[in-house]
Image (cartoon, rainbow, N blue to C red; front, top):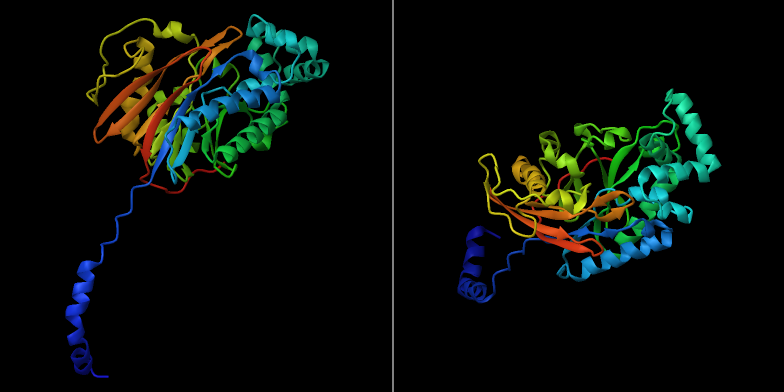
Length: 380
């Protein structure tokens, strides 16, 4: 058929087609995808590590409460962030009762050796191979305990959080744990890393972040991981960057996570609420436009130091915000607690909110994350 003939046939139909198009509704613009992020400041004590059953029950209680109050709507992803070292204490799972009632970590370390001939033999073998004469040094004992239990520790950690993620259809940043790399599990004198695994709603491990800048006390048993190994992790909610506690104070870790859409910062505060008690007015923010922080403990020295990390460096990334939950409670002579931080970024401004962790109670930090990117994530 010639074009002129086709036009003659279609011309009478054109007014009706235009009228029909005008009457039909325009297709609705797709709503922006978003996710709910909840930082869980979970309350702990040595007693919750008595057995796997007790540990799982305590974790389920906290996570179920976080899910209930998250405000999650149908179709939204849910991201849950646990605190630093929450998984590390699984190294004391299933021990004798005196260990949970011990007054301090040095006493715990001594009891571990005295009550386990197999661990004592392992520890002495490690000391001989490392040429380390300080066989009773607390952190050397603890380091060897982590190596000795590494395979079971990693198995418990991954199984518990995998099942939890599936049960609640959530993405979980599983606090942190101190273990060698998977290929080094069971190896004598293997380097130990502060490690945070991210689990997907299907229970799979989406990615792993390792601590780049251990604090002074941690350097006695942890090996720093290279900043270049830190990558954003691909999730259904977008690219997620994980900074383990003190990694949030350093520029190189943010540069490694420059493409992240959101930052999860599992943290601990040794010294507990006492380190947040000294008041200091105002935040020196290095010319960043930081709104006046809100919430309990917002004026304290430690709160400002923590906030200066995320608030001062979030602009090195694409992140819309961050949550930084703290472990809450007393583990022998280690007390942790104080206000965790929510950072909300709008353009060139950030707003800070402090959420106090209350010993003996779980507290939650809520953030609505609008998904912006879903690029490639890091390797395990």
